[in-house]
Length: 388
Image 1 (cartoon, rainbow, N blue to C red):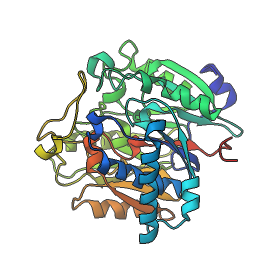
Image 2: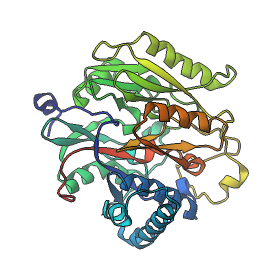
Image 3: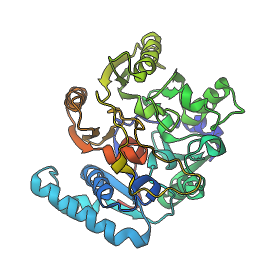
Image 4: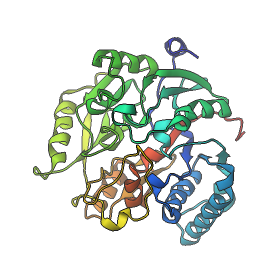
């Protein structure tokens, strides 16, 4: 399918808070992101997988040789959570909701390497963007990314979904956010970075987004989260929770570099309207009071390849509660063992009173370079050949 077909067919990018058919995730393997001993982080992944699979389908991308160990970790995690009452469904339902797909990958960031899905009243399609590891030769995070660059095409083919080729335009799923009603959120820091589409102007990039996402308006925020190695993806700073309402990562500490960045976003949003002309309500969620930084003991088991971005002691990580994931009947959100954890939980509970709030201790995910939203990509509700 061509980009020119999107408008003809009335395809558009729906909101994450709409109903899902399922979620795509990738089993962790890269030692430069998840350490050599991945026992702990794979248990965290299994926590997320089982929470999602309780309420929707879960497509887990994994190599056949890792399947036995992964199935055991996921099954054991499921049993532990059922026994504790954290999961309310049956074991059969949860395990049966997981579909394994055998593809090669370079890392586990499904948000950025899986397709961006568009829908209309009758069908679904997946956009395959050009992936260059968040900056290519200019400031990319790893050198070899051919498997990740091919993943969106492979997923569309395997799931029998129409593929929209956008491989001449660099974009990651975490750099765009939709309200499902024609409004797209992005940051200038990311989309205008020299490692993405440097030959295109801001106006040309906006036009491409509107055409490819079936949208009517792009709202450009200046910045994302401080020290976010993705060049400040939107999904770590701001997210729609319903039409004309969004959450924004915030701090009241004017000495924190995040204050100026978040305030620049607020200044823009206070003056903006969405694609339907509605004033946007902004709810602040404070970042952790104590910055999450790399400790000496964190580094002992990482194995970095040549050309791969590394970690340093004292490096501040891009911790934000906005990197939560909305799935059917649940919100899966990160915790940082900080005094702002509980207020963030309360805020999301008020915003999503009909969904269970599930928490994940996310420090080890953050050390990998992202968080829960970065690891997931939603498939809007549709009928799948695998789960009829």
